[in-house]
Length: 592
Ligand code: PEP
Ligand code: MG
Image (spheres, rainbow, N blue to C red):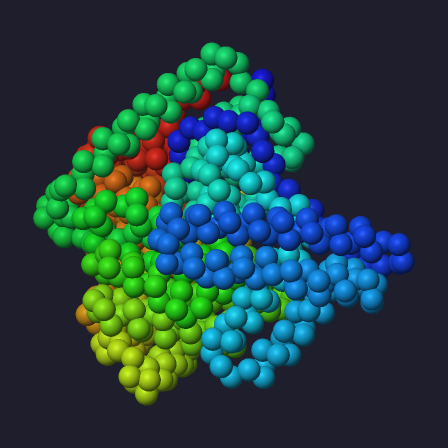
């Protein structure tokens, strides 16, 4: 038995066998020598088989989560894969040109690329795009040890993990927990784990040496503790605790029946953040006022391809059917959110690089189909809002408004309906636009504060780097002052302002935001009940005064301990919940 201490980022207890995330990439030479042909063809056949299995699984997943009609595209791809001509053409290149399997695929992609650029027919172009997509998948499966297929009930152990990998793992069975070396509260894998309520501990040094594949782990996401090879009594204690926590969380859902208002009658709006349309299914109707943030880039990250305008239109329309309002954020790609199908430059500082709206403005072929899909979906119930990520200055807002007008113009010409009055908003997550918030508010309909990025840029600390991510403290007086300023300015101009960063999903922080004047909270799905419980159990006028006092303190740590003490005095029940969810329970982990 051994105990590892890390940083608690998603609460709860997970018990399971350690399973490592491995990605080994073999670099293949472009040419082979005579006699190696059969081996290359065998590799190719295996990769094709693996791709077929992957697509079958993806199809089942999409059928289950989005419905049969969405899976049609995969049927088309499976047919292409079964087409003998594809293997024949690749085999011929291997035999005749002595190309490696990778080179043969690349050459075929280039060939289709050439054809693609000359074809005008929309349907034919889509078909060629599908063939390319298949070829890229086969190529990927040649070189990489694919991610293990079933992650249910395992504890995923990794040094770092990309958003696309996390999405892939979660879609293939819910793991018991994540144990990572890198990361912080707002690391993308952590955001996803939180959305699904999967206990997570980050910052475990030398995780790959400390833990061995297959070892039993108890992950205590409330304390940031990982027990390696626990004793039988520790396992049974933790199982019992896991059950109690589950029951408590279930009971808490009763709160959804209550109105969205504080104890002293201040109304607030509770929205949800989602990454996959499936997350929306688990949310009881009536529990939320809508989707405050759909991170649409996960549509790409999960399938590793760019969905067509039609596919996007279907997904957005279905969300609009289910919720009374839906805020669709344009693809926030770049930094660690990338797919092989799209071109990205090597960057020294990716977080400060071409990401979010910057990437979309220089890849209009990606931007326009998305704008058109959003606009078309907005026609049905007129309840869709469009939001742009990583806006830096007012010029970018003007450009955004222009491209939206342009896309509307295209649809008018094609006689396709859309909501003329669709609300356009921006994420406030870059300090420069936060400082110009009142001028931004004049140009757009709404603002949503991305505290995950805004803290990383304000404190100059990488949100994904566990060594410095603690500096991204939203309770730091510098950050609270900025939040108060922004909320006031937006409200002065009569514009809606919400927080969709993780700050709104943390109980104490949500209460602080209420005291700072915020009325719209967009929250991670698994955190909805607790945030609702906190907001509806406190008085706005009490918090406002407490925050004013807190703001005079010199550090985030002091502000936090002052506010916790006050909460304990005034709202003891809420204090207990905050303690639990904020991983600050005193005392030792069970049996340790
Ligand atoms: C944010 O930055 O706070 C945000 C909501 O966006 P993301 O976490 O997807 O970068
Ligand atoms: Mg962001």
